[in-house]
Length: 144
Image (cartoon, rainbow, N blue to C red):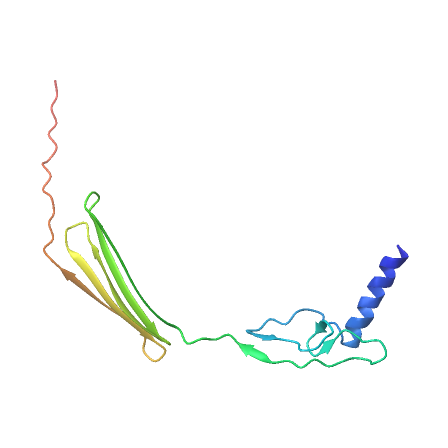
């Protein structure tokens, strides 16, 4: 029990001295230490006997990469009548693309869209083809 209390007091003392941090810092940059002693927190490594604290040499690494992609997708299922497709491309903060789908009335809906930081999201919807509505006979009521 005494060893647990001593360990807790040692950790508390290191925390108040600034060697250990209270909570981890969350950021997109990570610190890499280039010294022989293991790092305890940002900027300090474990104490080396007879030499005091050895400051670490750190480099910030930014993991941001320029987003750029292009993809296409499509389904044509004759059994269910499910016909749809999509194409999209992105270069940085500019996204543009379109998608099409078959409506239940037989028409094709096509949506062309763009998005960028200056203009926001914009979409143009087109409908092509002729709608076909099935004619249902009025129910007849037959009484015996």
